[in-house]
Length: 208
Ligand SMILES: O=P(O)(O)OC[C@H]1O[C@H](OP(=O)(O)OP(=O)(O)O)[C@H](O)[C@@H]1O
Ligand SMILES: O=c1cc[nH]c(=O)[nH]1
Ligand SMILES: [Mg+2]
Image (cartoon, rainbow, N blue to C red; front, side, top):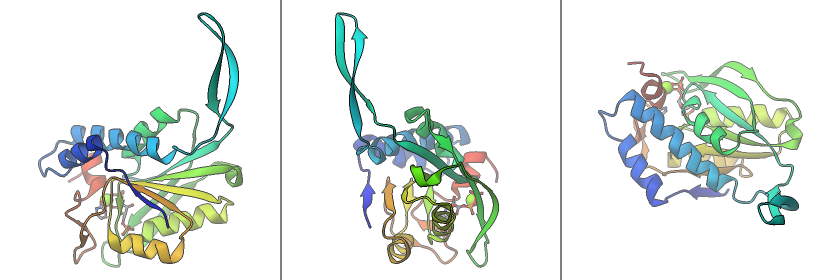
């Protein structure tokens, strides 16, 4: 399973700011979106382009444009919304498929509460957005929804991933590509990523 750690200096710096315990809601939100933008840049590196001719300032000029690649962005509620603005800045024409899951705090199992997918998923590449890949349960449930709806090309964008979740994903959906700003050390006894970011949803929405 391809796992791309996007360790550009700008990303490493921004992630360092996100890890600070006293970061404000506004700053956390701004940086989550900025890293979302940079991850999108990497995750779309292999999109095909085609040549076309336009009228330039000095006459006709050959340019390139993205070749009819259809994309759906899939933010996982709630925390995935924190990355969405940055991703859509890069791909303004993308359709958005929204998926809502929360993790049961005792069992750590994902609980589905909302799904609204775009049409023709068999023609689209899906870019799943979630700041945290912990046990992998939420991501796997989202991938299963997308595959059931016909989607065959799926990539996931994360701020931080845990080795435990990546291992589980490798065993279940090795075809899915992961782009993450970091792979952290491990999960603690209550399923939080160490050193991680804490509860990303709470930090983005200012709850708690
Ligand atoms: O890999 P997993 O073990 O499934 O955990 C990761 C999930 O947990 C968090 O969501 P949470 O349940 O806190 O919901 P929220 O976004 O509403 O805060 C996070 O944003 C992921 O969706
Ligand atoms: O570390 C974690 C794990 C799951 N969800 C979070 O928001 N943070
Ligand atoms: Mg949360």
